[in-house]
Image (tube, rainbow, N blue to C red):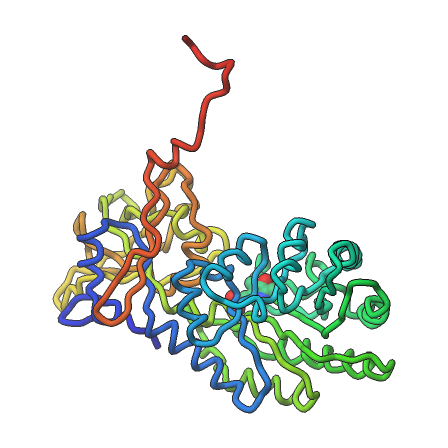
Length: 424
Ligand SMILES: *Cc1c(COP(=O)(O)O)cnc(C)c1O
């Protein structure tokens, strides 16, 4: 459920008409709903009742500091994958004690930053990284709290570009080696081993891969504890899938997921860390754009809109489906057409939906791309020298531009010609 509904025939974010935002700031823009973000966070956190759990929002899903601030206010921590995201999370008011640093290629600079702010935990993905952390922590006279991210070699059954938990993927330490590396890490200077971590992929619609992976983690916990080593935290990652509107089967719910966690890893006396991204932010955002032209060819009709793959890359990157709806409800007696909804970019991949059925739009009409709150604006670019898309946060009947459109002048002003190219 989200808070984007038609009110008096007009698609609104909570109590704000999307059309009024468009009138004020133009299109395209992302609009996020405070009520939806809050609701999703709460549902996730509530499902974990009775567990000693910390929910760390995966910042890469939506890193706007206003969104992070909102989640921080609800008690969320952050899972970050770069020094940049770490800096954002801190700026948004998420305390270092609730920040987890994930990622396969953390640089010395990023690791130093993380240690200097007293980060909660660094999830280590390889032996060379472990050695780097030991060296940096020792040199700075601090102890680095770490967890080993294990690769359980379980196929999440999701899109190839977002599967992370098989040995074909670059992520994590092979689970068969983890036992030995765990005890080695315990001997290393500057290292305090807190526990284990895993994240097997994103947009999982089947819970069985989670069960298998968590069972594997449970086996590992038993082996490590048998050696007399302690495990205080288990980071179970993110990856929970959400409906985009083209599912054939119903999506699992978070209660079922929490039940699997209890069954596979419950009662171990550890603190559980979760890193949900998409399930919190996905349905909490829409991308609003205007129709530029309706181009009727002999075999196909194209609705050309002013948003493009540089604003939302998911359709072309992951083959993702997003439902697209008219902002003004056209009512019942409308002329429905079948059309590809495309952006203006000079790439065939710049297609949002193929063969969509929609009410025949007029130039200037607004369309909303639904479920665009996660992995949307964060992946936007200025390709084709298009202004960087704006972001807006709605709360009740208020809205605020939380990232203004970055204009062409600003984009170009950062570039310069080399001195030898000067013509005068
Ligand atoms: C991307 C990522 C997440 C979040 O995944 P979602 O599918 O958005 O829940 C969590 N943890 C790690 C390590 C990630 O890379």
